[in-house]
Length: 491
Image 1 (cartoon, rainbow, N blue to C red):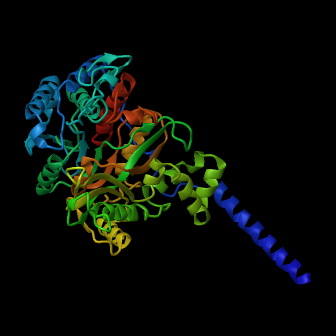
Image 2: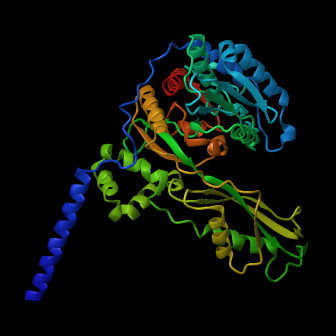
Image 3: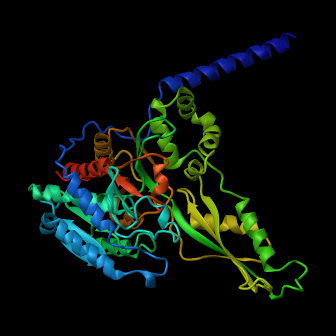
């Protein structure tokens, strides 16, 4: 009994030490990843013509720069109309900035700085929009290409993604240029024409800038926003993407003899083989891990979060599996912590009573930082084992972007202006979709992804969906952000 008592005493002492360590780490916790932005001299607010900006955004929405998967369906004349509209609507900007067109319709504007020794900044917003799903037009409160201004907002496809950014960026530049502002640091605007489908315009812009030896201090593009009801702090939160996932689509093909469906083979043919392969791949998901930009977000927010969250983050050496489980409880949360696998398309026989000679599936991957297309392919091959299928990429995949700094001067400027204009705490995070900014990575020290717009989690669903609209409040906030960011970074 004495031995049992001693063991119990030792265990109790160890538990007390463990609890003490956890409490001390929790109470003394400081975020390890971000820089102090208090030294940044933020430029003063500018006067914003909200009514005029709303009219110009509405006019841009009426120009149908719709990108289709089949480029033959595009209407190039609409991009020409948009370019002419920008030139007519922003005369001071077009006097101050040098305009170039590459890859057909991608725009590059250069506002030369007075100090050539300073690295430039690059601001991005794309021109094209996604189609409206046929048959859903009547679900819109306002016709998707009418550009109506109603209920305190501008309505239509592209109001947020991404003509909202494009127009408010030009509004900010026009305000500064008309007021006589001259940047010390060169400011470059890049506006791709096919971000929603191919990204060839941004690739061409990046190649041109690289050929000129450009090495930007930072690139800023769309990606994340101000979430007004974020579940960690239950309040506003400005999320700046420090990285984005890679993108690849795996094609799985099962060959088969084909024939008449009245006499199927014993193994039921290629469709069953394909089903087994797809199921095997989907049933072997990538493990979730508390690391990367998704973890950085919680580490920054932990001091203002509920005590259990702060305790878990401060002691992630112990609670990392629990944190991964909690964050990954929702699809959007899980996407922050691992590479996702999404079977999206299937093809079999062209007729119901014909056995296919090949059955094919397409599986879309969003590749998390830390993984690569090579690790994805290896995992898929291991999952299918000896099933008689072939695996190949639909096209060369895009690898995950590098993770940009949260301590650099570039981060300090972007985060300081974002926090000041939106009146929200700022945190890094991961963009789980893709943006044109990935192609600018070779010509920049840091690449960030942020739209200065307040959106609830429900609002996010209207992007690429129905009833897309930008409130006048968000429109004014975005103009302020872009104008003050330029004036701060380039002063």
